Length: 200
Image 1 (cartoon, rainbow, N blue to C red):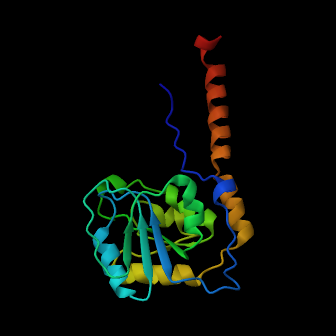
Image 2 (image 1 turned 90 degrees about the vertical axis):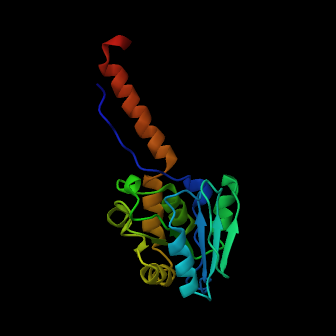
Image 3 (image 1 turned 135 degrees about the vertical axis):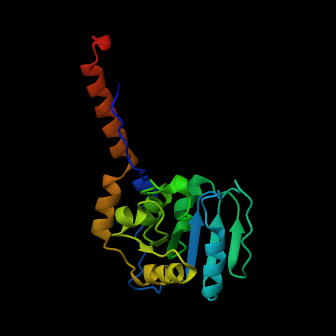
């Protein structure tokens, strides 16, 4: 019986890494979500938060895998975004959103969604709920809130915290690049082959 090995999501550093000059330019009051609208997305949290931040724009990209009903004057529901366009789209925003429902039992083991790495590599702030283990694993880079008031504050604080330390951010993203992950898989498979008598 083979042991279970779990690896986190990763990011294409070459495609996504950006260094927005937030130190000279005031980050826009624009938040973005890129993903898919599944049951795990807290739609009511997004609507209530948007209403608390009327001077912000919320652009939400993704296919509708579940019924979507998010009506607020400052929410723009946009469709699927081709992956090659994501890096440039993210660079136009100051905060990336991870509004996962904290009461979703399937998310209790969630640690680091793919969009976290892409938001970070794009150089934008991150606002997330405390679903699963995200606060523990993403705490150095993201701001957290579960209620509309907390989530709104997380968005404001994420914008205020820009720019991230570029060297630390690049180092983190490079450690979590797809190239590094492929190298780990290659090493693990090679080790299994060497230890398995079937391959002798």
